[in-house]
Structures are given as structure tokens and as C-alpha cells.
Image 1 (cartoon, rainbow, N blue to C red):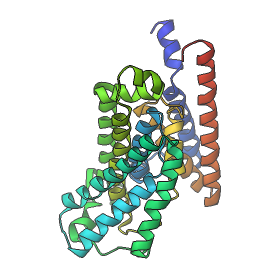
Image 2 (image 1 turned 90 degrees about the vertical axis):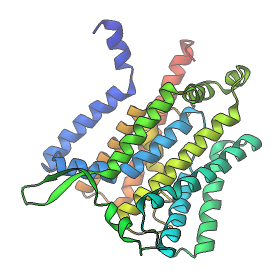
Image 3 (image 1 turned 120 degrees about the vertical axis):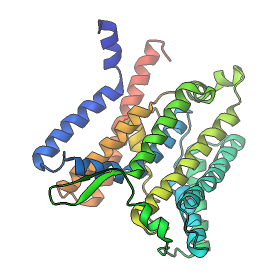
Amino acid sequence: MNHSSLKRLLRRTEIYLLGILVVLSIVLAIVNPKFLTLENIFDLLRNNSFLGILALGELVVLISGGIDVSFTAIATVSQYVMGVIISKYFIDNILVALLIPIPVGISLGAINAILINYTKVHPVIITISNLNVFYGLLIFITGGKWIYRFPHSFRTFAKLKLVTLVNERGIEYGLSVFTGFWILIAILTWIILKYFPIGRKIYAVGGNMEAARRAGFNIFKVQLFVYCYIGALAGLASFVQAQLAQIIQPNAIVGRELDVLAAAILGGASVFGGSGTVIGTVLGVLLIGIIKNGLILMKIPAYWHQVVIGLIIVIAAGITAYQRKLRKKKGLV
């Protein structure tokens, strides 16, 4: 590797994230030798599948120069609609259950895109408002009732594993099907951003919306795509969360926005738009998951977890802003 290639490599956020992950993993393995076992790693990946899928949707929105904080309400509504339909009509078909929340998420994402484009109000205001509207209406209509009586196929699907192993105690463990969902969505998002025309338009609009408009890009179509995409992923993530919990609680997802934003921003997605990668976001999710795992191992009270995540967002966003300032000075932005 020549000097210029090494220099380019060292500029990448992913390299530093990977270094932090390795150091943190070694420290936690010293504190608790079970941390680096394959069983714990598989559990960590499964438990963060919900966060990982949502973070990939937020990545696409951030690259386009927008932001979405309503995805938890979208996931909650999508999940509840799925729960009502499969429990009321006792639909014992996992594929149907999987497909119900996705169009619901896309519809609510489209509402965000239409309001953002036509009102010209900042996306954070629109999506915060819609978070409260979607969630408030759900609670008003349902009374906040829990759903927990599911058909057989829904109850057994959560046990499906892509790889099954047996530990020294004779207990089976393995790579969850939900980790497979996360990997597939990561590959799909990477392909869209790298090879599809819409991917290049998302980067162009996020880099400079006015220049993209003058170049003939349809800004509304780009916004419609990114908010529908995160809506679809919120629907899929809601299915994963319901599977892992085996219960649908209207108050179980709303409030987890910080973790998703932290993972995407920590992975290098700029709050100013125009930059961010899939691999960086995946590493960001893993880092958030490991930090939370470490805080639990150290028996730090749960309310401090949100303080730590909030600080991570501030530091990561501050570093991004500083890098942008440096690039501006060099005339690269």
C-alpha cells in the first residue's frame, strides 16, 4: 500500500470505529471472559437487529440532508396493525405477518415526505410532530392495550436459526434469522446507494440541494424515496421487535430514537447531509450495542445509559462539524 492510499484509509471514520471496537471488546473480555464467546456474539447481533435495521434507514435519510425521528412511532403503528390483524383473524402464516407492517410503514413515511416537501419546514419539526400524531392517535384508538395471543407460526419463527451450534452444557445456540434480516438490509442499502441512480441522487441532494435542483434532480422524488425507505424498514424492524419480545406493547419502541441516531452519526453519517456509509453505520450499531452491554456488565443504572448515548451523539456530531469546517477551509465543500 502506497503513502497516498494509506493516508486516504486513515481519513475514514470506519477505521477508527473498528479500532475502538477491538479495544473495547478486549477490555470487556478481560472484565468478563464470556464476552467474546460465539454464543454472546450471536446474542449481541440478534438483540441489536432491530436497532441495526432502523439505523440503515436513518442513514439514507441523513445522507439526503434530512432527518427522521418519527420512525419509532411508525414502527409502533405498523407493529400494532400487524398484531391486531393476525390475532383477530388468527392468520397462521409468517410471510403474511411479515408483509403487513411494511406497507403501513411506507404509507406513514410518504406522509412525512409530502409534508416536508410542500411545507418547506425543517424535517426535524415535521417528524417530531408526526411522531406525536401517529403515536397519540394509536393510543387514543387502542387505549394502549397489549397484544400477546399470536398464532403458532408467529410464536415459533423467533427460534429459527441460520446456523445452529451446541455449547459445553449441551444447550443449542446459533445465528438468529433476524441477524440475517439485518445483513440482507445492509447489503440492499449498500447496493442502492452505490449502484442505483437514486443512490447517487440521494448523495447529490444531501451534498447541495440547490445545486441538485439546478442540475434537474426531482427533489420531491428523492425525499419520497428516503422517507418511504425508512418507513419500510421501520415496518420490518417492528416485526423483528415483536418476534423477539413475543408481545406487542404500544409503549415499547417510542423513546429509542437516540440509539438509532447515535449509531448512524457515530458511523460517519453527517447531520449536514451528503456523507455516510453502510459499513460505518453497522460498526456504529455494534459500538452502541457493546457500550450498552459493557454498562450492564459494570452494573451502571439504566438511566445513565441514555446520558452516555446522548454524549456520544454530541461528540460524534461535533467531530463531523469540525471535519466539515476543515474541508470548507480547503475548498472541498
